[in-house]
Image 1: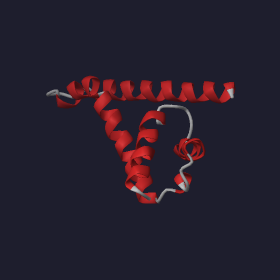
Image 2 (image 1 turned 45 degrees about the vertical axis):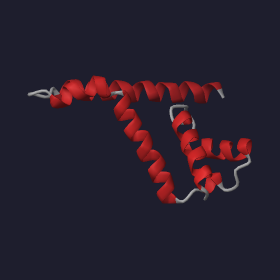
Image 3 (image 1 turned 180 degrees about the horizontal axis):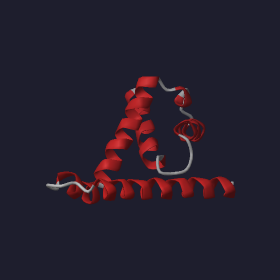
Length: 102
């Protein structure tokens, strides 16, 4: 895989990660639309790195909400889990609604 292909797939991963389609799905779409051969068959290590980058981006984008809870002298674990649960619930509802719309 060339560096350019890796960069393009990383950008596709970053842009499409929050859409209710699988990672393999948006890589397959990128392969088709951008004529990138083998994009849907990325090596496992590269796939893990793409997901790690997504995880870091999610933590950075929610750090203003999460960081005060994590560095507080006394962490309110209940509040932390409620916030995380709410985020998961929103993602789940979005995925179900998108699935019903397709």
